Every structure is written in C-alpha cells, then in structure tokens.
Image 1 (cartoon, one colour):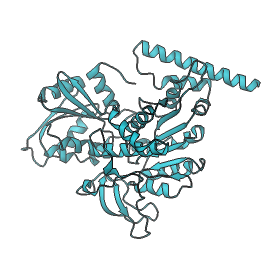
Image 2 (cartoon, rainbow, N blue to C red; image 1 turned 60 degrees about the vertical axis):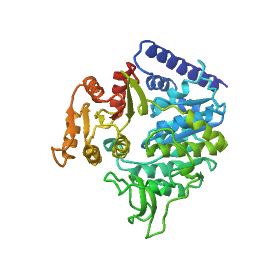
Image 3 (tube, rainbow, N blue to C red; image 1 turned 90 degrees about the horizontal axis):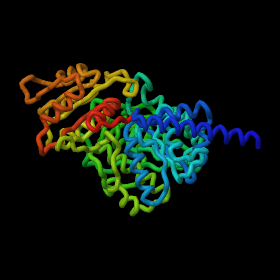
Image 4 (cartoon, rainbow, N blue to C red; image 1 turned 120 degrees about the vertical axis):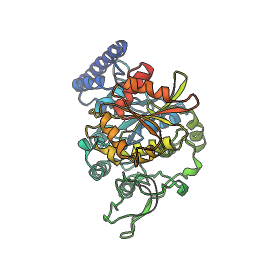
Length: 443
C-alpha cells in the first residue's frame, strides 16, 4: 500500500508540473507545449507512459509509418467521436515519447486520472519497438515504409525487422492493420500470430505509367527476388507477386473504389482506407464510418487550405521523395501555375537533403509556370530544378528567394484570383510557412 501511495503521489506531481508548464508556455505564446511538458513529467515519473496508457478504457490505437500518420489519426478520431467516444490524440504530430506522454496528460486531471475511451497515438517509425510494451495497444496501423531521414533511420528493411520482432511479442488479440500494397508490410502481416486485417487499393485504373525513380522496395521480402508488378499506385505500393516463391499481395478488407476521400491526392485515399478499416475493427458500423468521413478537418500542412489576402492557399507537406512526388502529382493535375517550394534541413527534417535528387521534379518543371523556392537549403533546391530543365527556353519562371516571408509574398503576387497557390514545404518549413501566413506558432 505504501508503494502505491508513493506511485500515486509521483504521478500526481508529474502531471501537475507538466500542466503548469503547459499553461505557462501557452499563456506566453511560446508554442503549443506539445513536447516539453512530457519531458519534465517523465523526469519525475519515468514510467508515466505505461501508467497513463493503462487508464485508457477501450484501448490505444497506435499509428506508425513514414507518411500519413497525422491525417489518418485525425480521420479515425472523427469516426470515433461521431459515435460519442472521448478520444485523446497527439494532434500536433509530436510522435516521440515525450510527445505521446504530453498528449495523454492533456486529458488527465491534476492527480493524473485519465478519463478517455480511446487514445490514438501516431508514433515515429523508429521508436515503435520501444513503446509497444508500455503502451500495449489494442490495434496497430502500419501505413507504409519509405526512405525518410536516412541520416537518422537507415533503410526500410531494418525498421520492418524491428517492427516484426516487437509486434510478435504482443497479446494474441492485438489487431494489426498493415498496408497490403506495401510488400514489406504485407509480408510482416502474413507472418504474425496476432489478428491481421489488411487495407489497400483495388483500383488498377489509378496505376502510374511507370515505376517512379524514388522507389524503395521492389524485391520480395521473403526470398529477395524481383517482384512482378501488375501496376504501382505510388512508389513501391501496388499489385505484385513474386515469380520465385509465390509471395503475393494480401487481400484488403475493404474495396477501395467504394470509399470516398475528402482530401486531394491518392495518398489520402490510403489514409481514408486505413482509418476506416481500423474503425470497423473497433466495432463501428460501416454506414456510420461513411457518414463521419465528410466531417473530417485536416491538420495544419496536410492539404490544409487557407484564404490569404483573398487568395486560396493549399499547404502540402513534402518531406521525402515519395511524399513529394505525390504532392507534385497534385500540383501538375491542377490548373494552377504558381508553386512555392521550401526546403529546410533542421533536425526534425533530417539534415541530409540529398533525397531531393530522387524526386521527379522534371514533371513540375516541364509544365512551366512560376516556381518560387526558399528555405535553409534554397540553392540546393534551385539547382535541382535547373537540372530538371531540358532547355532554358521553356515557360518556367524560376524565382530564388532566401527570405521566406518575401518568397510567400512573391508567390501570392503571381497567383491569379481564381487559382490556388500550392506550397510544398518540409516539416519545419511547414511550421515557418504557417506562422508567416497566420501569425500562429506550432511547436
């Protein structure tokens, strides 16, 4: 009993200290306080993540992957809240341990009592193995694995092996929901003893014309032989079989053409299917899931749309080759002719920006129009675009502007009244862009 009282006291002290920090940071407009409170609280109570996770009534849904975590999390929250459930969420995208703790503490009282039905936690792909045991999730969504921040993470194979080893130790009734179109994740799901339900696309008419340059995994995860693709939707995601060992794409639970999406981009169709599959596994009726989808509001930077000076602005986070190729696809399929690209190389972005040479910028350059580039690595980006030009005589107007606010102003000037300005920033650049546009910091 004495130990329990000490634990409760430490829990209450940790949460109270964190809430005081949150109040101070937000009152002084120093940021969103999405990480620091968790860092301080964990110094007082190192087991805080486990203590809070155990209090979630219906269970925790963990969402992992390179792209799409935030949008999928918010979609699933919308579906659950429409059914009257109380949901905790790390909505700012702070997906390391301190961010997870901070998100859970948002819903506690001063004594550390957590009163929510579900918690949806998006988790950085590199810490999945570390947090599974303290969290003990009810369900895990495995969205995709692409090359992202290679200076920190390495190739996708090493990550998938860690995921498989960690997930295999969880309870048998844990629901694992992998992307069937990703060979690595489909193989992961086929080799787990837990309940596995797949999501993916079933729309061959949306195949790309060819496998893109920024492809990550076109070899069989079982035997190493080259996969035979009937077609790809983006990067290495598609319909495939292995001619050597018979490994093949798993069957998705939902027929994708029967589901609408509310955000532009094929990658957001994946996010919709992932959230819908998870909601269905949590017991929500399909009809109610469909009703909830149109009520979804995107997170900042994830196809978020703003009106600035009477002009429409759409922010499309572009932080790695695959994601940037998809946002470029959105831009080139539109009738808008002004685009702002912003490249930073801060810690949260990954300090290695060589990935821009794996992006199919040629498609963006060939359509012409006005491209404004800015950010910490503006000249690297400008060089990449120049190398994408077959001739300097095309209709491209390339403007290089070091100062981000001036770059935004220039981009707005070149955007016609009936058009949309697309802004393609890396992660920290997205935060800077949004602050410049709205005057609000997100940290």
